[in-house]
Length: 240
Ligand SMILES: *C/C=C(C)/C=C/C=C(C)/C=C/C1=C(C)CCCC1(C)C
Image (cartoon, rainbow, N blue to C red; front, side, top):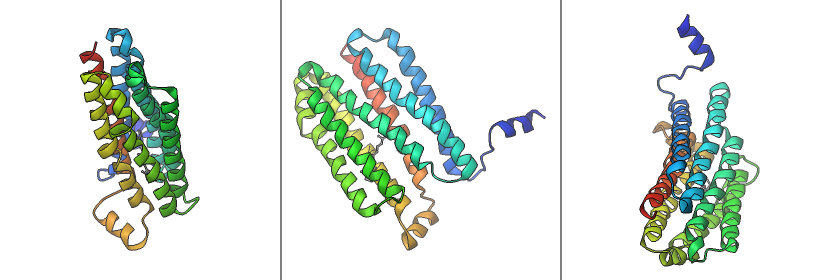
């Protein structure tokens, strides 16, 4: 009785359905991380409170989207591309805000923030057009990648890097940790995109070795959103 009630309320996940499983675990991880960041706000110094709050907002927005994406996938077994990109359009600009907040004291400007946000929006809107099949996936994926490399450049070699170095060793170290997330962690996404938009023989080969775009995106989101938040959190403890 209780068993069947539970099955009604929560679509059962088949044993080998890794896509559904990662949507489910992703939802829980984002929820748990949000609770953590929000509760820690009360013992975070005033100087870092906004940064930790933004970490919590990023995982919270993702938690809500994951809740929907999990349900959408369970019902239709199709990729929730639209929800996915709405999530990213809200959370990736907030990740740019984190760079602004940690460099503000050493001269980070809103002009630089807007350039980063603009690059992230270009990266995501062009990526969406390719992935949703509204336009050529290779052409728009390439445009998206150029915008992505601009963000990598800013964080590794550009203004963000310089400002972070001037803000002292704790901020400089946090910026290079975030830089690794942007360079390696974010590179997970174009890999998912290649798999999701591949056709013919390529598509079959990816499927055969069990690679699926949604699994890759779900792992990427958990690593990047929670990881980013934890870098900011530990900065808030070191440089109190
Ligand atoms: C929390 C969500 C994050 C950090 C999402 C990041 C997404 C990307 C870095 C996506 C990049 C893409 C390319 C560089 C080319 C192909 C299209 C995209 C949008 C998958």
